[in-house]
Image (tube, rainbow, N blue to C red):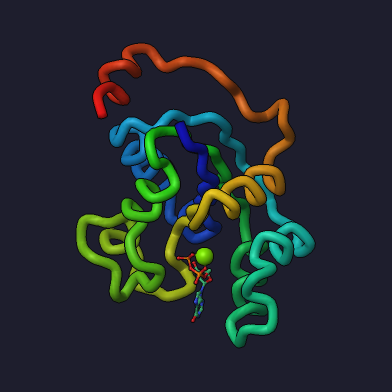
Length: 151
Ligand code: IDP
Ligand code: MG
């Protein structure tokens, strides 16, 4: 079972889309292993997006991610990293396929509603950056054998 980090970015919170998008992840069968609403400060934003430092959109991205509260969570399930990235769709909301979260709700390159970890290494780094160990909750979801069963 794999864990991945998701961030409902400030546009998602302000547009009151958190609930219906979280429902998509739950419906898919992913387990919520951590969830909280926080105001991101510049230091955390810069650490999270360190790989984009120096790019032309970096400063705008930091202004965006610190521009209002976010909901950050950890989802767990079979192939959770890929599953979440697939549900999110392409980075650019104008190009994301209909049926994906960004395809259905975003029409912006920057304001694309959610972040999802892109590899096992990123997931490990990001989970450690955003969550203290005691905030990550291990429990079994009723009926999960029906969701995760088989090959
Ligand atoms: P990802 O979130 O799909 O992994 P990345 O390329 O890692 O996409 O970019 C991180 C975030 O930076 C994007 O989700 C988006 O919010 C923002 N971003 C990426 N490219 C651009 C751009 O060209 N202009 C403005 N913002 C961008
Ligand atoms: Mg990325």
